[in-house]
Image (cartoon, rainbow, N blue to C red; front, side, top):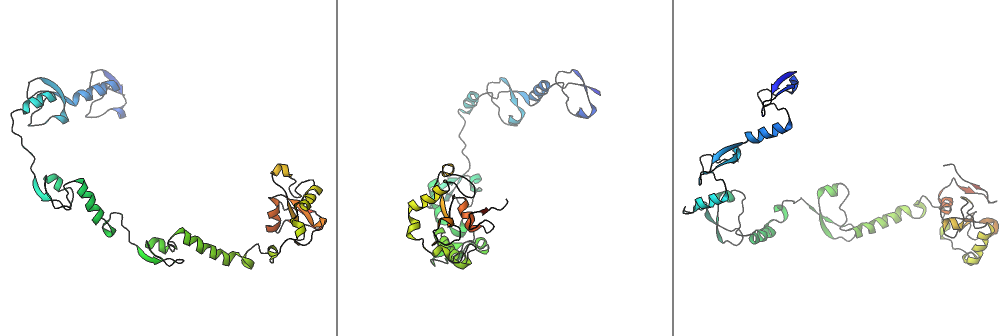
Length: 282
């Protein structure tokens, strides 16, 4: 521990050696530190007009120039003095070719100069186009693969297999044609020999016939055991042997909207001819 004196009030205070500021002031509290910094950053000077002494920050004192205690003294001191305007010279506006005065400091700020904001806006709209624009990117002309329309795309998008179509509409047309080739008919993973193309007999379309099948099983799904009230929808009628023409009561069972697709798309879920169901373990 080391005893040091406060730089503001002079009070003796104990400090750790690592907490002592060498060649700088040490303080007993934050209040003393704030007061000393406020005093150290200000100085008493006299007004150049009325001679009144006032406190001013050191960084605001104009060396070798006049300092004033208020705006009133500054205004009074300027009366009778000749007005000295800033140095300026004449140039022509880059848009309308009109002459106007400009200071050297403003002239160095930019390459182009304008007499008004209106002229600046007109000049930018004419010249800042294409390669002259700040956000310009190099583009290449491409022909759309569907409508054969010419459009521009950046090389980055084209190299990453993007930007081959002029619009989303053309892209979806190409996607639908590709899906037809790769996902329809025998190429589809759910292909079952074209059974879906066969039509249902007129007796099966009758709603009364389907209702009798549901009533036989008490309107309960034969896989999950949920009723129509639980699901909120009518049960589907499934053909066990996948033969749409076989309308015998032993071949028809009711299934809910969730279990019916599982029968058709999952091979490990099988219903035997006697109605027993083998459900796979999850």
